[in-house]
Length: 165
Image (cartoon, rainbow, N blue to C red; front, side, top):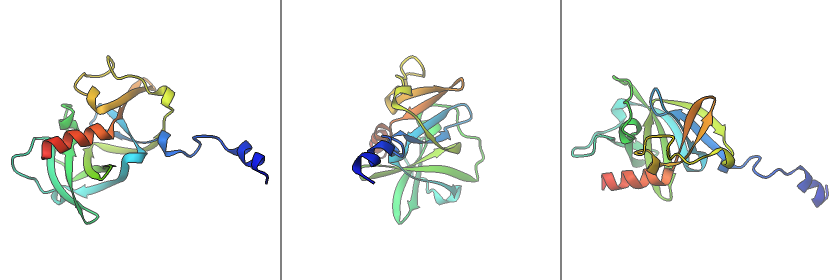
């Protein structure tokens, strides 16, 4: 094949991670997505594997061992002041995210799978969602009469770092 034939079949963004997202339910009513570029792993762990720590904000569930590293685990609904997870839980659905060298575990209601979003579809969250959520969002997407929150992993990690220091 010549070089021109290769470029003919190449479609920018076809397999790009930049438009791939992990989709999940934060709680029963709220669906969100998080960029695959910041997602390390989605895991289900027994509640007992998270060790609670004294004198922490209520959204910080505690610490857990993940792949020989100790990471903080955050209750996403509590962090966002949303209706909580159904209790009593026997296990946590945790999304492990990484921003630069910081790792964080996010507990969510349910992990749905992956989806692709075009940058053109992501709109400003201002006026669409509660103002308390806006600092944690890149935007939102209207999909099938539902609003998907597009989370900003950097701001979530920065918030949790401030709360756990």
